[in-house]
Image (cartoon, rainbow, N blue to C red; front, side):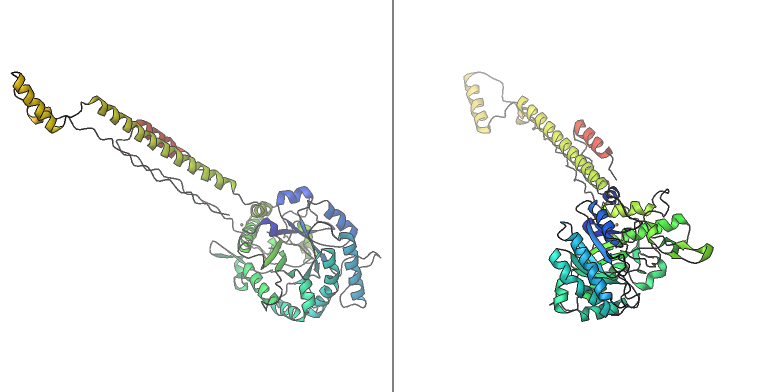
Length: 458
């Protein structure tokens, strides 16, 4: 499972922001949001726990201090307005003590922007962000042609600019996961898995091992429940399986490959409206429904299982097994001790057997001094054999297998495919204790019975 230090959630500083309490319950240590109003965004970030890291998306929708937006990247004066937006961000978050990254543009390939624009954005931003201790990320790709677009952008990066970057952003939508041997969702089986896509993106971003490594930041990934065929309950179950399996798979990637993975999204309000007229509906990617009066979707609980894996039951199970093993071992030791003590007692009561030569000499002396009857046969004088203390077999200590159980992006508004989930359950073998030999004392057998009957935590 991916550690929570690389798990993130996508929020929206305008209308879908998670409180500090909510983030503490959810557990992600990355939060990603588009920035509309710089001051409002700053105030929201200041209220968060200090350990939460921020990925701030700046793009054409970001407002400047003049009240105008940065505007389209193809419009006149864009470079000047973009540079101004970076200056404002640096002034607000310079040396903040919190780890903050700026994602420079969002899904620029879906907007049909050329790679040159994405490279220009980081070339203008990185030299200003690095001295302020703010990270800089190449903007995300998400189209079906993302490999070629990302590859071209990497080729256009100068060595100086690449050295100032902290990673590249990627949105692996329409990618499946494999849970219990099945593709989820099955319609995406030919699209590859989400973890495979991240590995491929890392390969495109790092074609030459002699260059600085750029990890992949998955600033959005998710599953739209509206794309899942079935009732609402089934859609949520599939989405829950998807998020847990995805984070389980991401956990196999190194920090050099994957910097963070952000589930899209925290609230359904982040999705865009699709359809027209009465059929128009908002995308459903979130952990919470758009209506604040409704409870969270079950996907929220699945997300929390990723940030805080349920290890307590496994620890309890291991403790129970260890306790049972100790009880069995103690019982066997006590039985052996009791047998040994009993044998020693019998040996103390039995007369010592005289040495053969000494016994014959004594008999001859007695015969000469007194008229005594002949010595009895050896068979009659033999002392009965010493009793053996039988040792009971100590039972083998049982082993307890631990199984482990598997969230989340947000960014600008983008369409995403269906989302599956597979809940993983852990099973632990109950310990067996071998029975002691029939000759074991009753106290040992009773202790073994108590140990074997002790329930195993699940």
